[in-house]
Image (cartoon, rainbow, N blue to C red; front, side):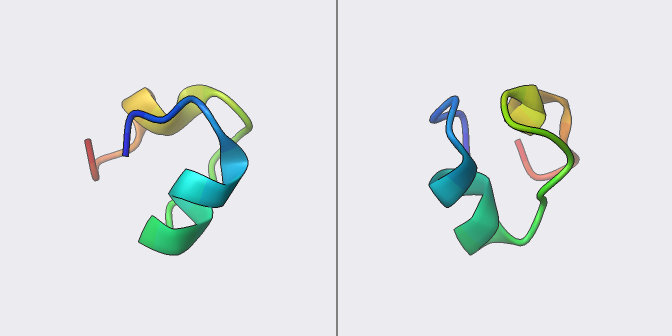
Length: 27
């Protein structure tokens, strides 16, 4: 999600980069 953190994207499964969670197709 848009939590600007790694643990957030990790749970979603979209670990692109630490901060690019908003760039992921899971926004």
